[in-house]
Structure formats: C-alpha cells, structure tokens
Image (tube, rainbow, N blue to C red):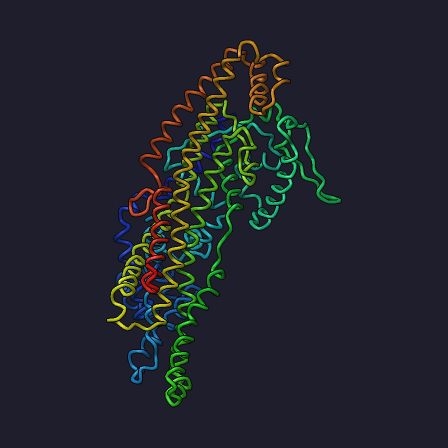
Length: 604
C-alpha cells in the first residue's frame, strides 16, 4: 500500500530529474553567459535596437531572438523597442543637435547609468537560467506561460502550486531528500480541508489557486485564532473536543488547532513534500509584496527635479531671450520628455528587482520563524503572527529528520532565483560603492576644483540614499536568517530536556491518570496522550525506545545545524552576514552623516 501510494510521486521525481540540469553546471558557465547576453543587450538598448537582429542572427537562432524580445511582434519586443527609442533619440539629439548647449547632460548620464544596470540585470537572468532551458529557447519559440516560469515575478515571487511542485521536486533532488522517507506527524488536529491538501498529490492540479483569496481567508482565520487563543490562560488551555466560532449569520470557522487531537490525528504520516508546499504557500502571506507601481511615483518626482532646478537656474540668470529660445524649442521638450519616461521606467524596474530580492529574503526569514514555531510546544513563547503554525510530533524521529529536511529546503528553494538576487545586490553594492566613493571625494576634496551641475549632484545623492537603504535592509534580513539558527538549536535543546524529564518519570507516572490530570502544560499533556496510545499498541518498552531514538536524532540535527552556521551562512562578496557587521554598517553611516554635516557647518 505504501509503495503504491508513492509510485506516482517517485515517477514524477524521476521524470523531472531527466528534464533539468544541475544548477551547479549553469553556475560554472555563469560568467560566459553573463558577458554574452550583456553585450547583446548593450547592442540593443544603446546602439541598434531592433536592428540588432540582423547582426545577432549570424551567431544565434531566430527562435532565441524572438524569445529575448529582439524580433517579432510581442509585448516584450514593443516594450524594448519603445525603451530603445526613448534613449537613442535623446542621445543623438545631444550629440548632433546641441550646438547651443540647451540640452542638459544630467538626465542623459542618469539614463546611460540605468541602462547599463538594466543590461547587467537581464544578463544575470540568462546566466542563472539552467542550460536545458536556454537550449529550448534556442530551438523553439516559448509560450507566454513558459517564459513566465523563468521570470522572477511570476516564476518565483507569485509562484502557483503547480509550478511550486516542480521547484520542490528539483530542490529535493539537489539535497538528496527521498520522497518515501520525507514524512511528518503533527501534534495538532488538522482540518478536513487541510488534510485533503496534505494527502492528495493531485490536489494542486485539480483545484484553482487564487492568491488574493487565500491571503484574505488566512488573515481572517489568523485573526480569529489569535483572539480565541489569547482568551486561554495557562491553566485553562486544555483543548476542547470542538472549537467552532460563528463569524456571520451563515458562516462559522472551526479552529481545529485549539482542539484535542485523537489517535488518528497523532498517528497520521503526512507526505513531507505536500506539507512543505502548503507551509511555503502560507509563508507568502506574511510578507508584503512589491509592485513596479510602488517605485514609479518616487522616480517620477526624482526625474522631474533636475528640470525644476535647471529652470530655476535659468530664471536666476535673468536672460529672457535665452529662456524664451530654450523653452520654446521643440527639441528641448522631445529630449527631456523621452528621457523622463526612460529614466522613470528603467530606474523603477531596476530598483524593483533589488526590492523583490529583499522581499524574497524576508520570505526566507518567515520560513525560519516557521521552523522555530514547528518545534515550540509552548505556543505563548511564539510571536502572535506565527502562533498558528502547526506543531510537529517531535517524539517521532522521522518527523524530526523531516523537519531538518524542510529547514534545509527552505533556504535552498528557488536557488537560481536566489543566485540572481545575490548577483543583483552584488552589482548594486559594487557599482554604487564606486559612485559613492566619487561622490564623497567630490564632497570633501574636489568641491572647489570641479564645478558639477547641482541637478546631477542631487540626483546621484538621492539614488545613493535609496539604494543603500534597500541594501541595508536586505543585509539586515540576511543577518537575521543566519542568527536564527541559534534559536533552532535552543528549541532542540529544550525539546531534548522535555524528553529526558519524561524518560526519567516514565516508570511511575506515564500510565497514571492522576499525574496526567495534574499537568499544566500542553507539552506534557501531548506527550502523555501520544504515549498512552503507543503503550496500548506496542507496549511501554517501545515507547521508551522511541524517546531514545528521538534524542539521538536531535543530537545529529544539532551537530548539522552547528556546521551550517559555521560553513554555510548567507554571504555577500564571500562575507557572512551577521549582526556585528550590520551594527558596524549602522555606526559607520551615522559617523559619515555627522562628518558631512561637520565639514559644511564647521561644528567641531
């Protein structure tokens, strides 16, 4: 029966393994792909635009050109062509039609910087795409859905259950997690709806998934769950047989997690792959999503500022003829309007990808809090918003090992996207550090020798502030992910202490109803309830052996976690992120701000 239950799942794993390349092979050729696609996109956006097809067709297939949006009538092609026109026209106007010097360099310099970053970001995307997918793109024209599966937004940040299943299978293969061993028991009662999701491998294919609806339902459930759980005190927290709350006249919600589990609830082994899928989807509800529209107003204001400053400077010069000639010039407005569109859109797009890297990091942090909540028997120790995460049966050695697998997979999921986010952060960190260095050199040393346009200084300064704030937040979240492993070690130590206490008291209290009735904590109540069933089925001797097995498993998990902390932290430029580094960055920034203020005002 067990073999039949997992034959279909194992076949899917085998089929997917044949169709995908190991990501490490793609990473080995990352630099080659990056340089190649970077040159292609520089040619397109800065030089030839849609005419790039004529040259690249010598080296590449027509299908790849269409999939890249370099040829054919498609949304990507039209969008990229409009971006090329909005840059190339001002560029040619500045070179060939600026004898009177009426066209400012500021917006053009900003545009060239942003297109350089844009080409790097796109090149990173192709460099981190697995070789088999690139080969397919060279051989045939991909459908819209196939292209979207490789995009960061639809392919990862807003991933649907069907595509998520494929990512999970790939992650299991990379980390050598066997589907037949990946099983989890819970200490909580599971609702029938959730139970169906966790036992049916075809559930995601046969049902529709509406992320907005799921988020609304989850937040409603979470709000009611917290209200009801907060009503309980330590002494009155015994679980009821049924916990149903009337929400409206014709709607009620059953809070199964506040109900006492029965034998079937405690004994059911849920496929770890499906448990992981549902918990991963749930973690998305805890992080606010970024959209491109969030950044467009900010950049639009920032792009208009140079024009306002330029107009004020012209007015201050009091040259009426020059002002009239300049602002009634058709070329002036074509130049600035096109650059305004280009800078607003491309900057917003670039910063959006950096911001969703931050969003992805926050989602991984939520997953780590989730892993902590899965092991915490005292639900009052958990932050309220994570309190309704299900408690796993930590007396079951298989469940503990599967918890370790889940934790490992949370950090490894979407590896190619995570590599992209790290590459984006690295590119921005290096590039803007150089820009910041030049800015500070001008501010402290070269201010009097080099008279640079104020509009350019203001634009660069605002850019530096926005980018470094996003990078700081990203690094801060990464440091929290690295440090939370210590919390996991603490949770495991506490569970081991509970097991030792139960083992110590086993001989004269495990079968005592009087002892069980006197217990205050659900931790021990759950243990007594679970082992009461186990003693009935297999005897006291086997129950003791189960606890000893779980304690041995905890030792191995703790050793593994300690190695993870030491050798596999989240890094940027090879530097492990930790709170010491974050505090140093914070202190350095405050010192720099004070030094800049003091340099101008001569306070000290």
